[in-house]
Structure formats: C-alpha cells, structure tokens
Length: 319
Image (tube, rainbow, N blue to C red):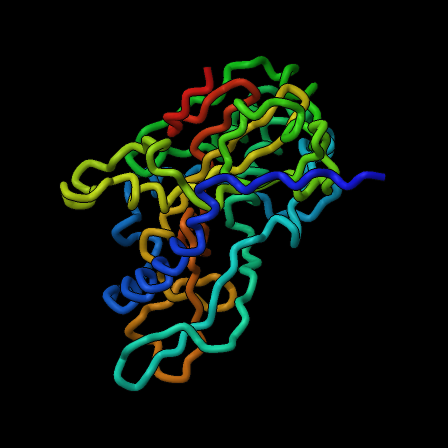
C-alpha cells in the first residue's frame, strides 16, 4: 500500500519555534514582575468572570450519563487525551530570580479546565437528548459566557432536534472543507483527502494565532500601548477547538484569562502567589501562545459555530 504523501506544514508553523522561544523569556518576565496573588477576584475577575462563576456549572457527577450528548453523537469524551496543557518546572533562586529548570520534563495539567475539556463540555450540553427543553436551554446558556471585552456571541438558533441529529465525523478535516477550518494545525491527510488518524487526534486546539487573521475585541482601557498591535496580547487569552462533524467543522472558541498573567502554578494547576514561592519550592509555568485554564481561572466557552460558519474573531476571507 502506498504511503500517503506528506502534507507540507503551514507557513506560520515554521516560525513557531522562534515564537515559543520568545514566550519563554516573556513568561518568566511576567512571573517575576507579578507580585500580587492571583485569586478569582483579581484584575481579570471582571463582571463577566463573576457572571460565569454564578451561572456556569461544571459537571462533577460520574454517572453513566455524564456525557450523554457526546456519546449520542459519537464524539470522544474528555479524558487524558483532551488534557494537553503542559507546565514546565521553574527554579526560584535565593536572589528572587526565576528560570526554567534545566533538564526537567514538563507535566500535563489534569484539572479539566483546559480548552478542549471546556469546549467538549459545552458541546455535550448542546447535543444532550435528555431532559426538557427548558433544562436543555438552561444547561447550554450556563456554559456560555462573554468574551474578554464583555461581548456575547449567540449560539446558532437551530432547533433542538437539529442538534440531536449531528454526528461526529473525523474525516471532515480532510474532506475538501479547508475553507471551513480555522485552526492552524497541520492535519495529516492522504493525497486523496482521507483521514487516517484517530478520532481524538482529529480534535485539535489552536497552537498559535496568525495576528493578521484575528480581530478579538479589545477590552476598554485594557489594551497594550498604541505602538503595539493589540491582537498580539489579547489573542493569548483565547483558544479555539476544531470539532469535525457531519455538517462540516465546528469551532468552539474559549476565553482563558489565566494566560494573561502567566502565573506560577502547582502541579494541580492552582495559581501560586509569587511572593510566597521561595528558593527550592516546587512551581510550574505554562509556555503557550494561546489560552489555557487554571483552577482559579478556568476557560469558558464564548462561541460555538457549526459547519459553514466563521468564528467571530476571524478575518480570513473564505469566499
């Protein structure tokens, strides 16, 4: 059997390594400069965060119908595969400076508040065939919040029966729908447009943003200096998850305010007060060009668009 021809990496991916190197320096700089403990009510604990805390309820039960919506649609349920945020150990020195630990492996944060877990939880509510219509609407809206500028993005007004008929189709990432794919991931497709990977590999989050193709809302008074492209900063708090479905590729955009602080974390993704982390203490940091979640600042879904729809942040011309 002939091996599939390799798919060339997108141009932005070739500069990703340089970008990550810059993030290493910037992230540690933010940690050293940030001497305020991060709590649920800090600088990013805006009215939109408070709204989400009062309405958004994460599923904590472990019953057999926990992910009834995902299972009905054949979508992989959250697990180790969906928790992809990696944190790297940080050494705190006696003089107060911090550096990434040498020859130390990163750890995966298993707190369930990352981009893919958050996106799947919202989609699960949308596709859940159980309960009354009132319960369904309540559960869906409880998991949708405002973006970082306090703007809301209504979900499609498709009737409930339409949602319940949707089915997962991993091959949608390769079936010629490239004008319907907004995640900068190099999907491995055969030369004749077929997907040969696993179902979980077909579900990907945004590894980096191309700033000329994004238009995230700028918080009032919260943007960078006038000499800096605000998208370079604002976009870091967002992530988008691609979910291939039978009607095309869905895109779930999440807002993750923790990424703006580049906080020190413990191994359970709890944010640490930098002033309380002394030399020899265990601490980690996340090096990421896109949003990630912590216990104190989990990601929240701000938009779900289905096949053929463009995410609110995209400037890409798909015509």
